[in-house]
Image (cartoon, rainbow, N blue to C red; front, side, top):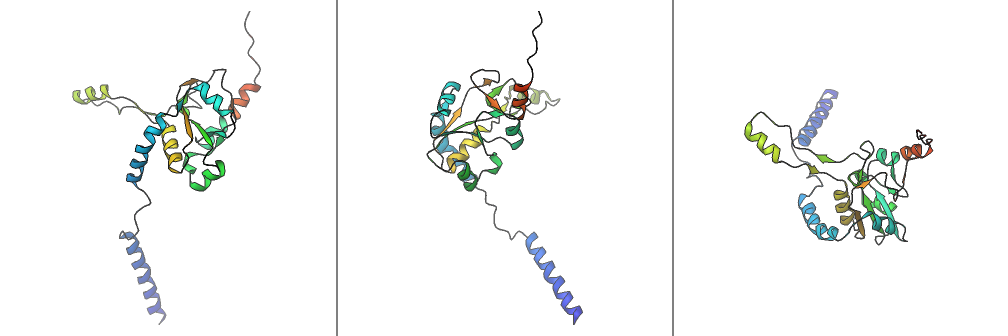
Length: 203
């Protein structure tokens, strides 16, 4: 009797495994059509909300406005625009966004690594370079014409914020030198730089 029960149990487990491996799961919660439709809506909306540094900084001081940094925890902790709130893009959900931006009418200012120049360690440019050139002449010719693809985090951040219902979004569109005196940073790296004694000027 025990042998019969054991055999039945093993057969049941085997059937369950076979079923799972047989493709009986529902489709993943992924829709490329939803994404394409969202991008089509966002394109015109975003085009009117690209601002220069002066406008970005002026807006950041006004009531009902936040700066949102969606880079990784590691990057944010090292250095970020002073006063920015943080939520890594990979953690975006309706609930997590609501905790950081509870009011849909809040004006949200965004930036990413590709907005800053002069510190590739902490603001590494997101770019996809052409694939390595092969020995074939035709391939070399095509590769020479290929352009790098900018993979800035601003784009998916903007698209997702819009999709989650945040329409009062503005994006910094200038490439700003990190030494520009108009903008201030904070974080472990920035704090260390501020605390370091000034290098004496040789006479």
